[in-house]
Length: 511
Image 1 (cartoon, rainbow, N blue to C red):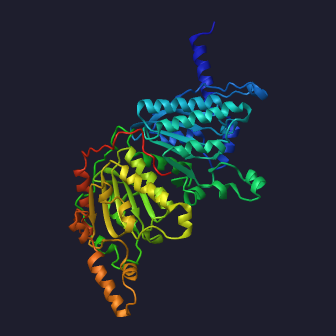
Image 2: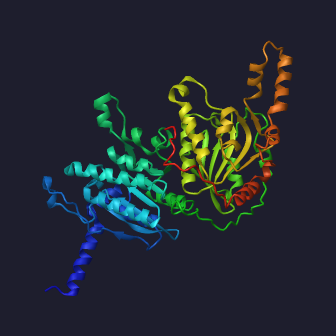
Image 3: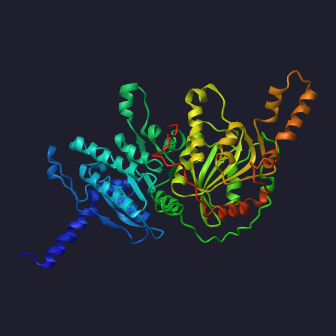
């Protein structure tokens, strides 16, 4: 009969075997490729000594193709819970050293279990993806496993924050779980995502493309807009995820975590007075204003390489997390187009789902004209952003820094679609269009002198914030240097805001 010592020794042996995953040789090969193991990544992500693993002893149930002879404890996924900055968080990490991280029915069940736990306990879940795809030996069972995960992603959407980090390959059906989550992080040179790989593309369309060009981190952060963040290596990826989590509530019933503010809320910066050029055609970078105004000049930007004519990200004002949406005149004059509208719309909806106030900075000359935009559906894509702002019931503070022209003025969180407080700099220009364009339409056959006079007259009447202020569409015209305190003041005023949309199953956003 086995003694207690024998049983404990057996447990310790099995536990160590599970922690070795695919074994020392495969771990060494993994490290040689510049990647950390699943457990090392979790170690970097979680607070020290807080990670608790579940389903450590799970193995696959396949008996085809000789699979019953090769069983590894854990079966290629490490799952469990721990803490990030002292707050509960769930995690699963695919282990590429075990069957190439391929998804089996058993490890899909592990991911589903941990996702259900996260929803039940009201805590975020982070998935670290590093997988060769479906485990071919299991056939439809593996595909069923993916669908089970997708279903939980959708069930959890808007309930708990869901974050995906692509740490290696993520191909085929596997890409749709990250695509359903709130944010996607990728790692330069070692991670990639695509529905069909280079070999299939070459066979079907005769295009030749590398994995990196097709679905690498830079491709998805700059061209497709699939990913939100890019890291240089595994360690930096985990640090960025930790920082992202500091802005997010644990679930949709909580407010985001407020931190003590050591940055003077009354701080004024004289350089703000000159930051917006008087010339409406002269560019400037809106990030300079954002970083000057927010706590400790710390702006956590999302999607910085994609649709750069709009800037989105998280910051704090008086210690309170806020989501910032800002037209950026440094790129395409800050115009709204298809990509920028979609980028901002999804971010606005995330902030609204998780009780994060929205601060909108406006300098927009309108929607980008042209056949490419019209054929691409700028009408429906622009409507996404309009819908998102109008539907949002969180505190909405808007600051017009310069141009607010045409329909784009309405769309960018104007008073008319539910903004709570609307400010403008004295440089604000709220009008149907720019002075020159307006004169060209209203007055024909003018001499150069008459045209110049008409343009100046239009500017005097409309290229300012005062007509809108007279109508109550602008609550206050403020000195640029007062921006920080005015925004904090407005957020404090809106702290107990209570607004509800009409009862309905859900709206029909123009997708």
